[in-house]
Amino acid sequence: MLNQVLLQLLNGLVVGSSLALVAAGLALLFGVLHIINFAQGDFFMMGGYAVWFSFNLTHNYVAAMIVGTIAMGIIGGIILSAVIWPLLQRSQVLVLLATLGLSLILEQLATNILGGDTKLVPPPLPVPVPIGPILYPAYDLVVIAAGIGILILGYFALQYTRYGIWLRAVAQNRPMAAALGVPVPRVYVLAFMVSAALAAMAGGLLLPLQSVYPTIGGDVIQNAFIIVVAGGLGNFRGAAIVALLVGEFNALGQLIPGIKPSVLTLILFGLVILLLMYRAQRQHALLRL
Amino acid sequence: MLDVQDLHAFYGASHVVQGVSFSVKQGEAVALVGRNGVGKTSTLKSLMGMETRTRGSIAFDGGSLMGMASHVRASKGLGYVPEERAVFPQMTVEENIRIGSLLGKSGDQKSVLDRAYALFPILRERKGQMAGTLSGGQQKMLALARGIALRPKLLLVDEPTEGLMPANVELITHALLTATQEGMTVLLVDSSFDLLKTLCTRMYAMDRGVLVGTYQPTDFASADQLAATMLGEARAQ
Image 1 (tube, one colour):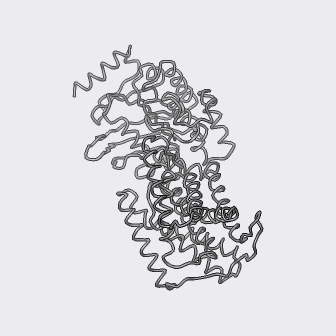
Image 2: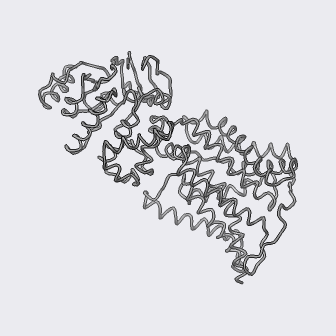
């Protein structure tokens, strides 16, 4: 039983750390631009394809990961700029609809161009690592380390680098940031690129574990939205922590005999609703970036 | 240094600044005075590029500012200390000051911090504290210290003494006076007689979106006289 718990704890971290990357990207965009990006799951999907494509070119998983993530950061940044920029001074509903439309277009394009079938890569690190009493796949540990490592790096970049401080400044008080000389358009583009790259990186990391197909983003985005709302909209650190908790919740929940995944999801929704009700009474608990 | 001609600003359906023309010379401290809601803040915001709909001409340091985004105007040497929402609430006092200096070299960043802390030593004591947890007066000092320490060519300051204790008004007056003595040009909106008298070389009276008169601080012997004149200008309209 203890072995089972340890195994599920690790599984929860694999799912949680990759979800955290997707959700942190969503939180960053919401924090800086106050917009919700429905296409975030599709950047996850495109990240998977980008890494699959680069892997077939290079046959080197590390190189494929780096090339795929950077390429999707740039492509995603360009797509988001093109779609969202013209709508920035307009109603937020328009941005919402535009990203929803973008999501449908990207999904359909993926199906038309790449086909609806599942793309696989060979396992990059087929060695089991002994952790206490159990053996755990080495690659899964890499996913955990890479996901959590990037999030910690992102957190410190937000705290201490020039653009990190500017991202937070624009999130908290855009007019004042601009009046102090912060190049707001550049900060927006950076937020677009980092947000897309985070989702793409998660898609690439999970590629050897769950492969990639055109609608894979939809499965990810639902959880990511719950996480961003629960983490405090626009709160990078909150989203990352809640994502890990959600991963663990789903993984450990499976240990309870006779419980279906759909029931777990219901319980999760219930918990998030309770959290929101509690938070509504203490407005100041909401943090921005 | 600053030459404004026939400046108009619109806020929704209302025409809040209706053809204002004035100028500020290098090294001067000039004030816009008048009752609340006559367009003083909107005039400052128009200069900073923060009003969405403006028309007219703004010449600054030899070039036109019209149509430029706020951050470009800041890089041309304009500084702004707003009356409200001046700080980043969930960033520390030190980060609040650093934001504007991050475009420069790291040595300059250090001296910006030193200058800000020298103006109001309380800020050094509070440097790790979130700006949103400072008192209203301290937030005003933070915003002003940052504005002055960044050494813009022209600093726009909106109501720096509004709602402050007399001791803090003195501190702020001293800070602005030192800045102008060191060569900074200031365009100020305020109603504190002591501040205007000490600092300003000229005052423009504003009412209902237009300029209605030009005064010297010596035209007024007391705060009451200044207030009466402002109200009088309003009645005369």
